[in-house]
Structures are given as structure tokens and as C-alpha cells.
Image (cartoon, rainbow, N blue to C red; front, side, top):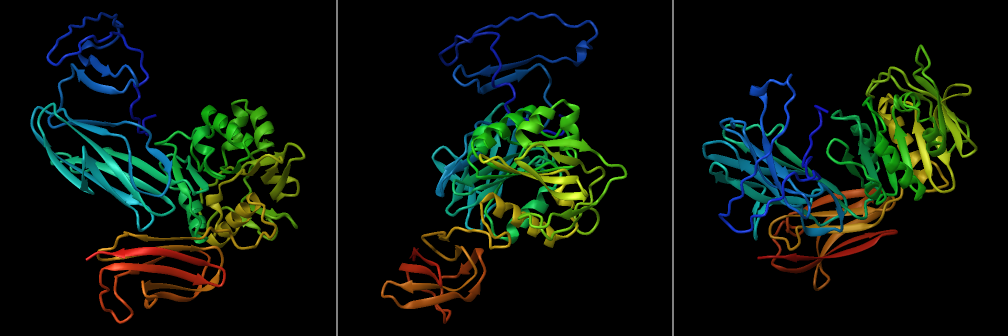
Length: 494
């Protein structure tokens, strides 16, 4: 587990001693004895004491016999780091604390960055005040700073916020950061990034971006994919890459619950079937994935043929080596449909299946015995993703356009200087994006003509078509198309 970043790992510990002090300045002496293995090197040992809250076992303070380094600090964060909620102008993650464990004062710099829709922002907040994306404070030895991260999410989508902690002695925050994710509750696709710290998920998200589909990414290094969390999404895309272990016992339990509730799963990875067979999980593969692991052909085969007439694979031969793919396949798996609910959809050779599709009438699964990321060109990756999502959604025409929901937002609103106008069209259409005054007079045309389906973002500098700054007041932003009519109030400040 050396590659994992773990937080709050002792919060469920059973206490050894109850602390009875209840007034400031009161003292309680604690004596504990314990046996030490004779083989241990005593000078390398340290005693660590943790004080926990009785109610939730959160760590309130800690001490150690280890002499602190100079300079040094420690930090931890409470609560879940992956949250789902409505579009909002303020969402606060739970408190995080940073302790100066050095014997000397240290100047701390806290900074937040966000990877999110253009109109989202984030800031660092203390009790009753928010400081902005950067906050500095001097901590004396033993002092701590207690702060919160705020997400401002006025439009649909998902954002990943990275909190970095640095000091003059440790200016590089590598290894000293906390990752938060906020997802609006109208996002229906979750990408489970289960490839460790590699970046195989980028091949999947690029295909989703190609169609303007909103999605969230859950990295299993930071967040456990529980059944409760997975159940809030209509479609799961599980990226395994070359990571081992593949599907853990917890993953399998969460997926079983998710699918039994009517979910849709796209699962991809060359070692999944091989590993499950070697840990005696044939039963789970058969009853949940409705698939058998059959073989690891040697030498491996890197070309697959689609099935004529199949909604997903018809007319799409695949090459899973070279090109602009990940080129990471060494032993793609040969699979076999387990029952009538499962069919082969890509094959290495006749009756040698590399991918299956499952429709039980309750849930659907598309399972690749190879890595989607290894498909050797973006066009095929995009088309495969398109076909799979359409099949999950029950769209009869495999090559029909992906479905989008209409949306329009302006941020910030009220507007002081500049604003981002974000809108989504359900299909390609002729449309205009315009701003009007209260009297109905058009003051600015931001876009006009053929606009593609999916998400769009336009900038407005609060000027009219002639470049004149518009006075403070109430305006309306309208998206008008052949099928789409959207309107949003916009307030301009002085």
C-alpha cells in the first residue's frame, strides 16, 4: 500500500483509556504498560497517543515520543472528499486541520486549484470568512489552522479541487495535498478510475468529451466506490488499466448491489478475468458478469472483429496495439458468454470472444477482456463509447446522436466585469445566443448559426455589439433554436 494516500485511518479505533477531564487546565495522568517483542530495536520505537471524540472517533489531538523534525507539520481532513449535490453558490467540505509540529514558527501557504466547468470556482474559508484561492498564516510551535474548502458550482458538471499545503521549508506541495470532488446531482455518468496513479482514464474521458457528455471521475486511490455512492449514477465506466489487484471484494460487493438495482456497467481491462479466475471468483463472474474467463491466448491476438447486426460492434474492427492508444496490452483475455443473457460482441477468431454484452432485463453490462484505452485510434474509441452509451440508454439507432439535456447558466451572476455563458443543446441545430435589455432590445449576439449538440461556453465582456460597456441593470440571455428555447436572467452591477 505504499502508493496509496490514506487519511483518518484510526478514526474507528477502540479506545484504550477513557479521558475524564472536562475543564480547561485539568490534568489526567495515563499509565499504560505493554510487552515489547525481544526482536524489536527499542531505539527505533516510538509511542503515539491519540485523543479521539467519543461521538465520531475523530482525532482531536496527538502526541508522540518521536523527536519532531525541524521544520515539520502534519495535516488531516474530516468527512467525505467526494460529494454529490445540487448546483449551488456555496458548498463547504468539512474542516481540515494543519499542525505545526516543528519547534520553530512556520509560515503556511494554503492554495486551491479546480478542474471543473469554466464558471466554477473554489476558495479557502475560515470561521465566518472566506479568503480566496490562497491563504497564508503563521503558526507557532504546536498551533494548528482549521479551515474549509468551498466549492461554488452554479452549473451542471463535476469538479476536482486540489488543496495544496506548503511552507517556506517545504515549498513543493507534492505529497502534501488533499483532493476533493463535487458532482452536481444531474450528472448520470461516473468514471471509476481504478488504474492506480496511471492515466488510462484519459482515453475514456476524451471519448465522453468528444460528445459533450457530463461525467464525474472517482479515483479509487482517494475514494472508495461504495454501493451507496455508485447507486447515484445511471452509468458506470470502470477503468482497470493494468492495475492489480483488479476488482477487490469490496468492489464486487458494491457492483453486485449497484447492478441488482438496475445499473449499467462498462468494464474494461485485460487482467480482470484472469485474476478473478485465480482467486476462485468464477461464481461471481458467472452470476453477475454472466461471463466465463476462458483463456489467455498465447501468442496474444491484438485484432478483433465485430458482429454483423450487433448494435454495439457491427462494422467496427478493432486493433488494440500501436497507433495513438495506450499500447499496453500483453495478454488480453478470451471470454465466453455464460448464459442466454450474455452475447459475444467482439472476437479474436470465430467463437473466441474478447468482449461480451449482458442484458438481464434488470441491468446491462459491457465487459471487455482487453483495455479500451488500447484501441489504436480515437475515431474507433469515440464510436465504441458512443455505441455502448446508446445501448445502455435503449436508443434503437446505434449511430443516432447521443442524448443531452437542455441547460443554460451565466456565471458569475450578478456580473461585474466578465461572465461565462454555458449552454447545452440536445441536438445539432441552427441557433442564436443573444442578450436583451428589459425593453426587449437586443444588445449583443454571442453566437449565431449551426451549433453542434452538447456543451458550449461563450464569454461576455458585458459590452454590446458595438463594444460599448452596458450599464448596470437587469438583462436576459436567450438561446433560441429550431428545437431549443432557453432564457436566463442576468444582473449587471455598477
